[in-house]
Amino acid sequence: MRYPRPAQHLGVPMVIGPVGGSLDNPEGFGADRDTAPWYVALRRLDGLRLRWDPLLRRTYDSADLVLVIAPYAEQQLRRRRVRRFEVMSETALEEMPTACATPSSTGPVRLLYVGRIVRTKGLRDALRAIAAAGTGRSFTLDVVGDGFDRATCEAIADELGLRDIVHFHGRLARPEVEAFYRRSDVFVFPSYREPGGNVVLEAMSHGLPVITCDRGGPGTATTDACAIRLAVHSPQQFVDDLAGAISQLVDDEALRRQLGRAGREHVAATAMWDRKVAHASRLYQSVLAARGGADL
Image (cartoon, rainbow, N blue to C red; front, side, top):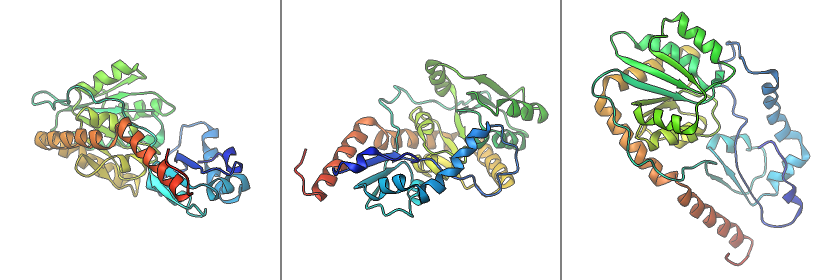
């Protein structure tokens, strides 16, 4: 949402988006040393630009419709005189996998994390939660992805004695990622500053129950019927609640199956490209009608 649009000067109906980003960290998450490069912190200027950049302000003030990827983005734009908001994620799936994942009835329960490994994705917190939840339970965690925080997360896993159950696989090609989805039982994605939500849609399309945060994109992409969505207030509260959610799903195969089925149904009903294209077409029609234009 940080870039002005040149179409603001053309005098034609203008739809912007889907836009997102500029989501703040929850209060209390500034104490950990962030391993991201210095330039990542420049995104903190977004709020000032939205407030003072005349070209950016005029972009939103002149739009007929602004599509936001989640409700938090509307809150970020609340100072602008936007005529109309609609929530529409910027991602979707082209097709559903042919078969759902089947939770393990024997052997360890297989947890999966897929994504960049940066501080705000919450993998550090997930590792600490796994240590807290591990007593008397049999499960593993596969970590698929790479990033600035990987070395720190591996050090935490060593410190907590988790290297026998936590496996770091690095960045993998798409077919290999899909294979991990198919053979896993629970998707753990505790990203507390996540603009979008495509990775949770991918996991749910494979029938995986999801543990995630009730904020940002994943909070919008999921429902309580298909995911355990956690509030985020402080690091210790977050770790405790993650540990509780992991314990609950590791212990309850029936709940895993229930959430997995609901997630697959949710994706089929809300997150396929053909449905989103049809919805976007209706939005364009409504913008034209408001301007007194003819139907496309």
